[in-house]
Image (cartoon, rainbow, N blue to C red):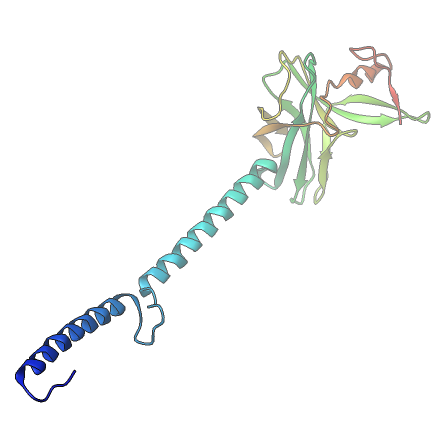
Length: 228
């Protein structure tokens, strides 16, 4: 379009140019809000980055706490002076079982020996037992009055070894049950603990009938002493 030779063409050109300029300014304003001058996406505000980092840190902390709680649920311990009682637990029992076994560890960090002399629970009776194997390879359970914990050593109550025998169960022990008890030590005194009921190794519920072999006879279900 020519701009010389009259006002009309000039006026028309001015109108057209005005429209182009307005559209250009509008486009520039749009890009300013969404794009940088070089055509790249505008960086998010610094506060957004900080908020993202903070959210990530909070999530990491929450996961760490959840992991600690899960670990604590699986392996719990109790303290009494120089003694540390590690992970008291019982195995689930058979539907009609009336006895169960409890296991734990006692680490003695003190300079003097101690003895576990009793375990108190709401069950009619809780006794300390050890497992003995004779020359013929027959294993039997024997009641003892106390279990020694030498200075600087750890006493381990575990399957096929020393353990706590609970009798008089009125209902089977199920996985997830919590059994409160009090451990009594000769020198350190008393401490309250919780026995967690866990699945029996191998998947079978425990009736602990082998305790009937204390006198060499059959257990409550007729089981004879086992040979190792």
